[in-house]
Length: 251
Image 1: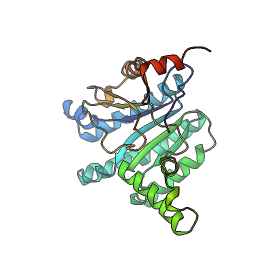
Image 2: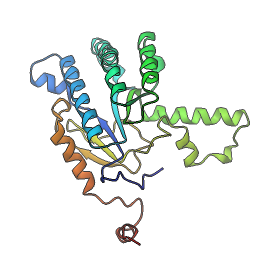
Image 3: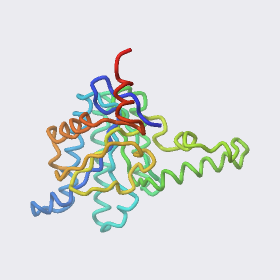
């Protein structure tokens, strides 16, 4: 469903980010690629803090796509170790700051150790009421839509639903982010201008913001620039500018 309501301060309720450029950042400094990913984790911590300050409701981060398994085996292994280590070191801080963590994606491909760590981290923060931090890991938009249809198909087979019950709303209810507002602002760092199979269903009416800044260098100024760009746009959702202007006038 489209977000007709913005936060009171005009900020987006839900920001989705592809954190691109870690490897290139490291290579530009003649460092191993893993050092870029570690620097990227530091940026994540800062962006989470900025979102709390700006009263953002949901922050979704694309941490590891289903296509990233194609990377060199050693890099994938180090990314998994970094993922586990970050969960271990940051979960208490997330809980303390009332942040709710959710990991979306096909977690069955992960090691038992990582799967258990994810379950523990989500359970530890499940009652928090502040920022919703969504981390997409082994995630793909095609996978998300497919798993939604598999759930719906099972309900049809059991007689719980009929084929004619399938609507856009029903499909949305079976997506991994069904209980969250759809992204208002999509940010991609690193200069690329594509969405790379991230939240395909959910991004239908999202405002896009691309920046050349590599993710480890994405600071508060860069973050506020993205929000400023968002605030300068008129979101029409299929309506005319005049209709939007009239709907915003006081009665």
